[in-house]
Image (tube, rainbow, N blue to C red; front, top):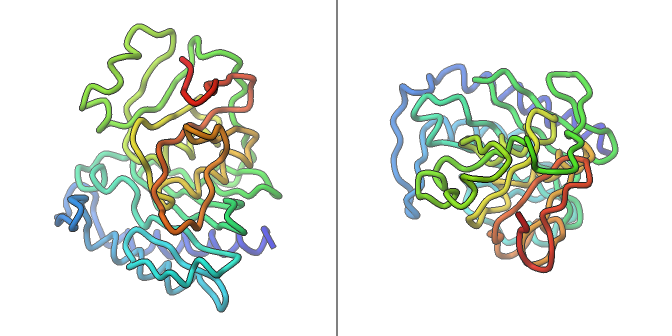
Length: 258
C-alpha cells in the first residue's frame, strides 16, 4: 500500500508544481482569513488540485484550506494536507515554504511528501519505504548531544522573543518559516532538530511526522512524549519536537529538557 500511496503523493506534487508555476513568490497578494492567517490564490489553487487528485472512495480529507468534514473521523485512511505551509514566507519571497501532503492510517502518520520548489527540495517517504530527497535515499542525522547542533526555529517565535532563552546554549538556532519544511529538513538529515513553542494543527505536521520517523528520527508532543495522534476531532496539538536518529533526548517527565 505504501508504494502506491507514495506514487500518488509524487504525482500530486508534480501537479501542484505545475499550478505554482503560475504564481511568483514575493509578487502575490494575500488576504486574512477569519483567524488572521494569510491565504493567497496559490493556496486555494493548489488545494483544489490536490483535493481533486488525492482522495478516493472511502478516504478522508483534512486540509487547512477546506471546511472540515467530520465524516473523515470514520475513515481509516485520511489525507492531511497543507497546500502551502509557510504562506507568510511565500508572500514575502523567502524560500522557506512548501506543499505538505501526509497520509494517515488509523490515526498514525505513515507516509508523506514535502515539496519546496523554491529550494529545489522534494522529500518523500513512508514507514515501509524510508525517505528520499530528490530521489536519493537519506536518513536523519545521528546526534547524541545538542552541542554543535543546528536547531530550526520558527521565525515568528524568534520575533516574539520566545527563543531568547536559548541564546547562550551550545547549539545554533536557525530561523525558518514553514514547520513542515523544517521537519522535512530534519528527516533528510540537512539539520539536526526542530521544535515549536506554540500549538500546531495536524496539517502543519502530518507529513513531517511520517518523514522524520521513516528516516529513523523521533517526533513527540509535550505532555506525552509520544508521536502525535492524527485524524482527531480537535486538530490542534500543544507543540511538537522532531529529532534525528541519535540518542539525543529532549524528553524528561512532561517538559523539553535543554
